[in-house]
Length: 622
Image 1 (cartoon, one colour):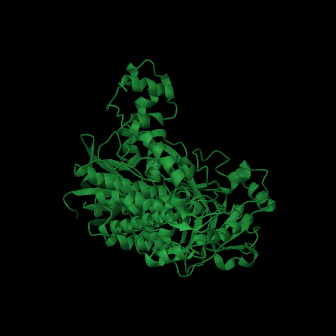
Image 2: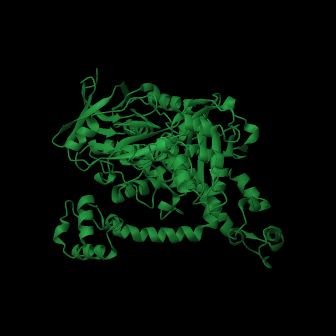
Image 3: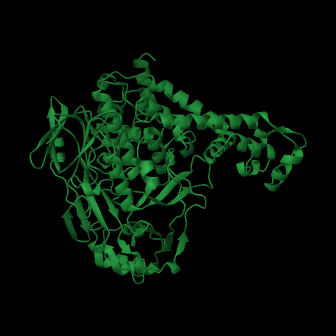
């Protein structure tokens, strides 16, 4: 039934699995994507949206490297928003509402259009391992399929257990069975596993809602898009809506707390801190008498609606009674209740930076199996695992992104250096170099790297180089061109900035707070330059950031350069930390467990102090 040996077998076809399969295949590997249900490839298990704070930057990075998530998001988008526009550009984060059915369909079509990808529907129940190396998988039908490497992207399916009130049943997602066998086998190899929890809200019938009582949440007036490739910008958009819970809603929910698996001890694992269930919010923030609910359509044509902010595992009758007391939901009809799900994960400190496991070579983990939460975090890990699986079997150098190069680099470094005991979610605050890691420059940072490893195609590189050339030329124009007081003073006066008495370079005026590109475009010289050089909105944005934030960017680059000096100090593989008696006991234990590759990575391990790093540097002769 199968080729004699695949290059890469990817287990699971969620966001991580899809990106892993696409990346390895597009780089030239023969890939088999194995999933329990071919109809749920690319399924959005929770909310019908991509991007958001820091997550939007990750989608842009995936796209810049040559991944598919940005393209799929653009093709299935029903609304676009750039979040945090009132803050600095390091905080700007793109987000789309998506058509759930079309998102999955576009993923399926994209993978079927990728020549090196084969598909197979069945449960993988175990791994084939020889001499501590993954050489394939075995299925529930007892079929052995051989490969040079394996990528596990099991999501919430490993021994998944669904909770609704005092009811519980096995499942990896509503209506789908759990996956068994893999955890048990990995434990025999010496892996550590744990349990995590996540949840999802009820889905309801939009025809039963009264939107006139809610606050419309439209998309941006001038929408953008995720992909740097020529995908289409939305011509029209669907509104979301906002409503609120109340004290009455909270009281009705509290009536079911004694039947809640969160509070009666049935669920023992930790859920996502930054996406708590409604009962958790009521319990933790008892002083608040109201919480926001975002009413999100599931697509262009369907009436199904996602109730964002009402994630819950309370009994279905309690969910229904409480939701009917929310403004606009008085006559709500349920498509399905919300639920919580517990599943197995493997602490990510057991991985290398490539996402290859330390215990079994050529075996890679990506997505929620590593303790993360979110489509974007999963997709980026899948991309990196697929890339590195291909590179490893072709005896090429590892592909690792540093913390100053990408949010993806921050994510993976956090996971394998610090580990996580609760579902890990990316935020801009996790990145110490976020001024460098903006959503507008992901292509400038990463497309050359994607092209170099054979993933990003030449047309992407050419578009990036053209954008870079135009933005640099535009910035130089501002540095070289003078502006007279009578031209610039009306602009300065409009933003309450001090007037000038003599001509000066445009760069200086443009650098002032509150002076925007729109202001500068009112100057004839600027408008003419834009027209003559065919400057598009993307280049306008890039040039504005480079002018207004050049000092901050230069400072962060300098700090990043200092970090790289420590990245260059390598620690020998298998280093014996027990012989360094000057290290603290905690440092010895954690360094031995994690086995950092560089001094820089060692310095980021919690419990390893600056004095411990000094001891290491002295011992290494530095």
